[in-house]
Length: 406
Image (cartoon, rainbow, N blue to C red):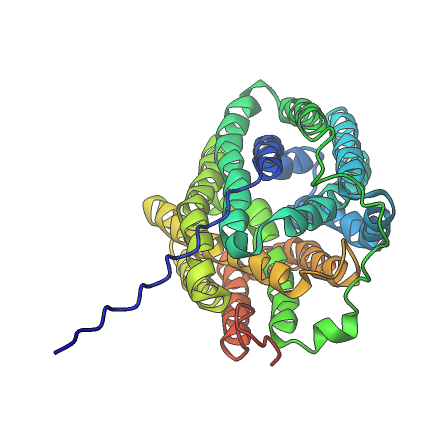
């Protein structure tokens, strides 16, 4: 009687390490978010200090996004011509200087102009950072890298509103000065650490052709991604503009509590982002996005129906968990679609522009709905849009499949 030895099983391939350059971008993202979070609680109240209503106060957020939207195609061209790193640093510098100028605004329209100028720099560093992360992240750990990068931004967002709520006590202009300084620190960190890096150097070889929009739009996941990006922009802008006003006007809380509400939302984000990013590398991007948008829809609808401060904080936390599930999976899905098609290009820019459209429309429409019919209507519309995004992803193939077309 003979026995056969079982065939040896191949050892699972080791996951590649996260490149040092990714960690540099992660640290810079934290500093940027820290500064933005410092401004967030003060921004609506600073606008209202010029004797304007809720809609006009919300429009300050939209002014920033309008210029991001207008300048996005130019940013994409700059990235392809100059490389991600120079455009990233220049964008940060523009935001830092415009934020410092906003701190000394003498009227509402000056604040609008300076915030709008900051939007130009913002889209420059956003598009370049996204393109750089897509280019340098190892394919096997895209979800993990996206989760790490997104988590760093959210961790800054958690710290920022708490610090911003405290700084408001020294005056509504002080957070803007702190934000400008934080951006200057981020510029110094990135410039020093990425100097001479072969991964982030400008490629002198013939440029790989960017992915044509027609090819991207033929992929169901990309169509769902741009729709979700627009809704995500709406949700993010509503979170920054209306959630603080909801706590101040409906729940009768002080500005510092509004900062705590934003930090609570961010806590939900960071609790979900990193594990969701890792999980998306294993089970795919679609399940995380569908589940996350569903959680976001339910929590936002529930927030619209409560006037209890403890319940409002609880639903805000759960809504943050929903967005935290979506963000890294969506970024990884975009990287799946674009991988191997060169830096920048219309596919990346269109995705970013769709998110900015949502950021422009969300505060204005949401602020109008809240002013005319109340916050429950504004939050209810946001919940319905999140449900639409979940449905859009439920009917397409995952980008981690062999074929990602619809």
